[in-house]
Image 1: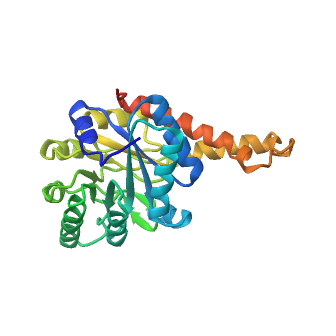
Image 2: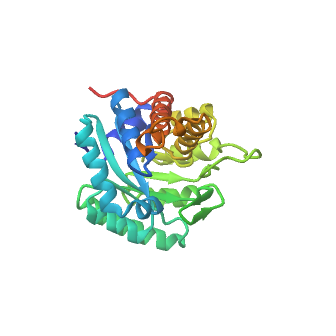
Image 3: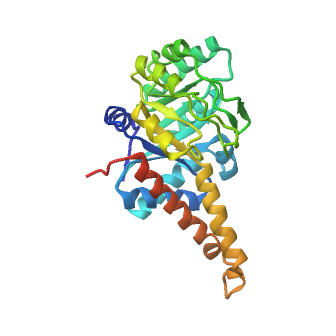
Length: 287
């Protein structure tokens, strides 16, 4: 079992024009499903938790312990990165203290100068403990734990200033959104992505990866995106498999109502989804 901060992994991904998946966990089943997929594909994986999911599960320390202990029990040998997703200032500091491998400080909703100051402080606190930092500039569309973004494009000069603080990877708005994509979505703005990638060497992050057409994600990866965030796609596959199980009346057969049986099809569906996504992200296997 190898828990790492991910810096070498994502730097190599940027240079190699592939990406590593960042998958949100929501409970024990999600954690096991993601770890199983990564182990079977023999690829590194980033497991991340949002502020809302951490509150639902207990707290940040509990989530970290769950991931670590499940990895131990499952005999996971691939590199695992434990990451805070879309954390505010207080959450980022709490996860640094809790010993996460990586944290995201999302200051996009603050005045830019305040985002700069607080990102710089989080970088200093995290790097002192060998923890990597993701920052954000330019809102990601949709809603994530109460943080709502309209999906505007990141300002290139602001992105350069944030990257210069020494962040380890950078989330930039390029028209992407969280959750399901509407029918009238215009797609990723590749012109803005090129502008960003031309002046920033830091690995770039694509949030809202679920629902973006595969060919657009692959193109973004070739242009500098090294980390792709996935949550909704796993939620949808879990829900569909669970619905199929119940509608087929499987929960009424024998002890089909046992949560270990009831949740098994959805959990397997998450593993299948993660494995499929790993394939088209181009993540190479580790020795």
